[in-house]
Length: 335
Length: 282
Image (cartoon, rainbow over all chains, first blue to last red; front, side, top):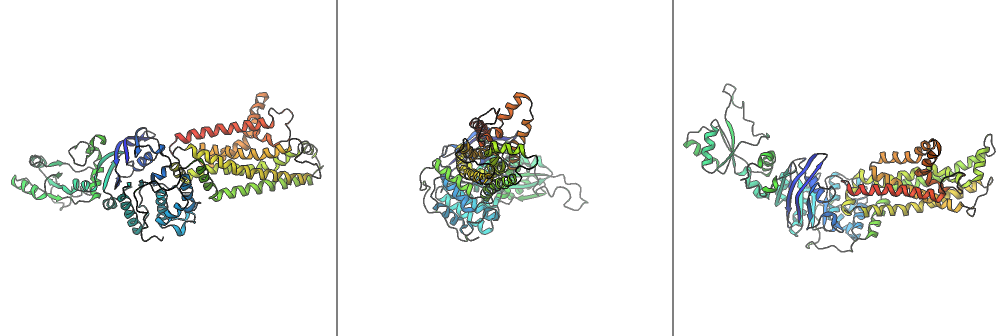
């Protein structure tokens, strides 16, 4: 189990991780999501004792990483940045790591088999493709047969076969009761791999929930409505228990119709766009019709983790204001 | 790429893998694996051996061939006074630069390639890793440097034999020869410490070579008695005293004192590097 409490780190005044708290439970694959620069890699480096936090703690099974004896037997890590000497063979890279942990030399051959690099074990690591380098990194992570794994963008550079392989490996390892934290920017990959998600933005926790909850709780239940009478419609819908918010500011194609989609003869569209949660599209249409509110658009939002993620992170600042959102599983730590 | 079917680890819940708890010996083994498994180590060591012994032979042969030549009298007199320091000055003066490069590379390549992250993940307390690296470096350099020191001595003394006889049984000669190996070994650790502080290969090599080659020239120009003291206590000035059979007339430090001063410089730099290694983000 990985526990992160109030973790804070800034580099030269720029905050990378901001009072971040979450827990990674064993027995499932936990996805670690966030846009570039959200602080995923920094958080992992802090958990692994490579960087020192300004505040807060990160523990693995109750111990800070730096206090672990033979840490590779407890924790395996694949970092995004390369950590192999280009002139050293894969075998010797794994051999020196095994020696630091007093692991038997036979373990090197086992992990080389595990990742399928035995044939190139004595080649210089500098000649490896990105995919082979990733496999070598995974071999290093698995060397001590650790019960906790942190993988930073493990599918980077892997071919589809490799992606499938690492996905199955992670699921299998989780099923053995190991703790797996895997970061990725590939939301759809996480949707099929991770059981649980931790979403961060600007170093802060945005959501911590099961993958299903994240998908369901976000766009899946929301409806886009455009109306020239936003105030009337808002009061009408909120009276029925719906939650009505303006759309997330960052444009990901949703604002497209504003302006001149129809022929230019028409007067400028003054309609406002609203995102409604808690009511279905037919029900919103019925309510609007019964009160004679004009609707220009009524679109149920397609459900995908990608969109849920975009919505969550794009609105990361205003998110804190909507505490009622079911995703804010750990509101207190989100700020 | 082979692995089409996923080969999965043995079905069992996470239990401690076989093997004993790692001790310091295991860290030394690991550092030895790191050192021997990159080409730069064997290349720089080979260059060190060839350059040092080759230059010793070449320069000594040159001197012998021009013995008693025009205006060679003061030089010949100096060689007659302390043939050993001539022999070591000839080859080691340049050969030592390869040791500087090797010492720096042992640590800076960890930073430039990112291996330092793997190393520190394996040894998160960090200082045991550094200690193991220094000890393995010392053992390796001591063996190679003593071979080179004695090799240089035998080549140089054989070539000089027609002009001046010098043997290991002469006063101070065995100490100077062993001392040349010790000096080169500590120089390697000195360079490693600079590499640890600077972390970038080019900057660290430039700094070490500046200290070894340029600094003595500058401090040699300092005036007065305090200038002489500063000069005498500079790392390279003090350290190389041990390669002389006799203390120079008016020398401020004895050979062993000079070597001690060099060791203190190295220890201070290493301590500063160790402190930063613990403090800095990797």
